[in-house]
Length: 296
Image (cartoon, rainbow, N blue to C red; front, side, top):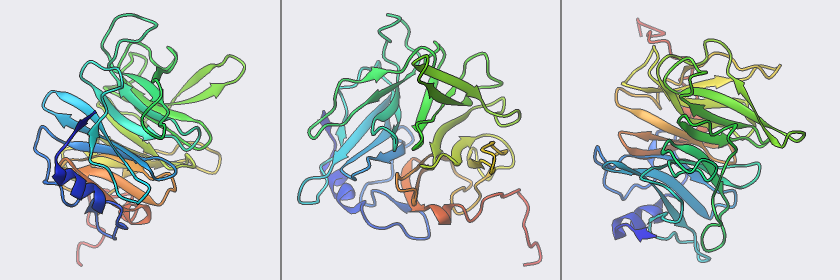
């Protein structure tokens, strides 16, 4: 593993502070990342001892981690170098179902022996490091670009893919494990849920009843906005709506994630990792691009 600066250590030591009702930096002591150093998709394991996130380094996309010591302090941010890749490790997410860290890597899959498209892998954290990562089956990893894996507490997997079976750039899919076939059953989202451009960087609440992702669709406040969608009482996904303020701004807001206790919402604003209570993040849900009280 490679370490980053002492400045990062100061930031990591501060990021345990409770989020306020306005978005605040997770790592407040870190300098704001440059255009080629954006940070996004922050995740923390169930016992609150391991944090992982994505950070860009020019043309590389890397995963970094920090670990909590017995005295409650956090280690310096360390680049994770054990995971197979050829320049891309991205979009990590700890699962509330099985405890694995799910992520995407463009490492060559053992089942194919070729190709550099990103696929979905999983790995278990140990007390001092990581077990050997393993890719998911070819039912998930199709040979297209599979990204953004997240799992809910029921074991349902959500991810994005630019497979030709979809309608656009990157489409969202849901998958459930079938005990009979010992493989995944992949389901398309309802008609109209995905768009012809990328819908990507997923997050779900632990119960699996709400999803977040970034999209280029209208209405939007910035270049890309974070949208959210919910299931109805029958378990059917409803059409996504803009998350609105205070999350979305005229700048790039992306890389959403949700804490495993379902209380805190994380996202990236201008490349900086931010946090706020989930209930606060939902205050602008359903923004339509219109002032609800133009006389106010």
